[in-house]
Length: 288
Image (cartoon, rainbow, N blue to C red; front, side, top):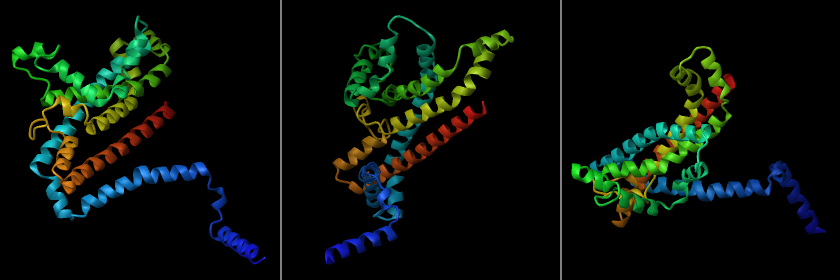
């Protein structure tokens, strides 16, 4: 009788203090625990490790000449690769949606190859192709142009891994655009260039920018392919993820944590930009 009374009191207290406790479902609990274990705790550990040395030391490590050179190679090369893929990815998506040709399904499946291919294998393939004796690199070697093991090789690797983001982001939008829109513009006297710039391009811009942002964020964090196709020499083609690994090899955990925190902050900014672009695209779709 006493145990029953205690259980009733405990249940009554929990209902008063936590009135929504019974509404917490198992999927909700598993989701929260997964987010805490996989995202929140690792990020908290990284920030705690990097800022434990003090802000002045954090700033000194984050702004060393080697780190600044790695940021330059990483961010500028990734931005350039994402911008080029914004154009090339739009062209590829347009061809896959608007044209039928032999082997179309094979080409469409090949676009996802950077997703499925291990990054180390991708780096090995690119180094083999663009090396001085490679199938493609041998044609540039007589002119003194070296692709593999230079910053140009880093650019090629970043383009390879970021292209699918633009194509797959743009394809659903192109599939929803009816060809009759172009025909209506032509019937009103618009030239092909005017039809593209004034009718087709505006609805595609949010998706293109979102794909470019996703590709840029992916390229910034790339390691496996770049570490093989580049020489990883400071002030030449060393990227920030490889610099982190070098610091870990030297047992400089604080330095690696600082560089990782800088990349984390940039990734958070990119995540905010991607979400803003998606909201802008939704508002544009509503207005149109």
